[in-house]
Length: 336
Image (cartoon, rainbow, N blue to C red; front, side, top):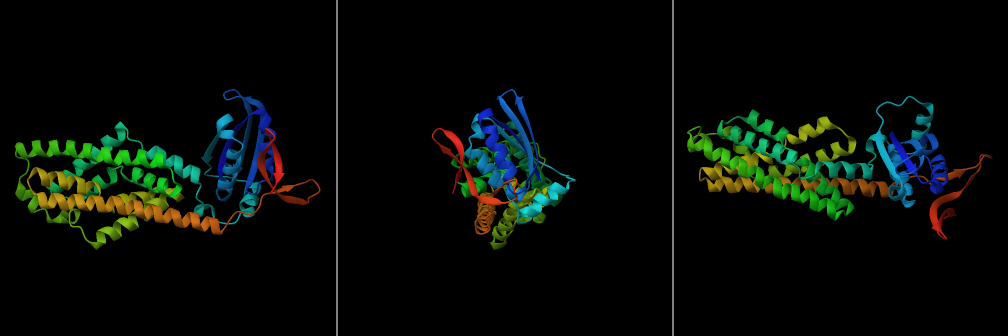
């Protein structure tokens, strides 16, 4: 389940309380009048099942709560409550399969920022990949794959394309377009100095057959990248971090960048070009797979809509479905 913390202006708190009280999949509702100081208002808290979260958040946003107040959401790892079990049964579907789009968007935004930490991790990963190529060490190459942070922006691009968020797409694309050249430039300086002091020679790279897979582009390069992209997006949706690590060590994005730099320093332009081709193929394939998976999820949700939220009266009878709407400058409950 998810815990919602809502700061609602005094004139909207009754509407919010009525909605969360009547919404399927919502339980553990508490309210404290006038507790919120900044922004001012009433503090309302509740727990909601993941399957119902999108509908609940959409209705709360229709009240402009995020503009006049605040909505925060956090996952609950352990909930011992008969009311929670009843709330989960009231909404069809499995919590593990539910995609909370606001949660996914925020997570993608956080992991796609072009920051100093992102560039440092990407640079270290490229340098590790270069060392793995020079020393013919697949283990070092795998280490570079795990360190590389590039999946975050790629996943964010897929989310942005699916949800039509151009700002998120541009922000994520900048992280890739700027991050990789900077990391490769620093790695190039490292490789140039290493060659100059005699740490390695062209024969070391030409004889490194254990890492030939990095620059050899083929049909399986696309297949592996597509599968890894789908698995990575699925791991983000289901919050399975262990699966995400498996994705990192499946795709040769960072190793391809490191190999391209080393090959270029040694004048092996053919291998450098193939490595760059491997890099582009993997980056594009991961995004395509992510978009495809998210699109399938959205289509599935549209074909399996949530049940109508019905207002429950003390008599136990149900009224017609209701929606929050704006009428004559104030908020009222209106029939649809």
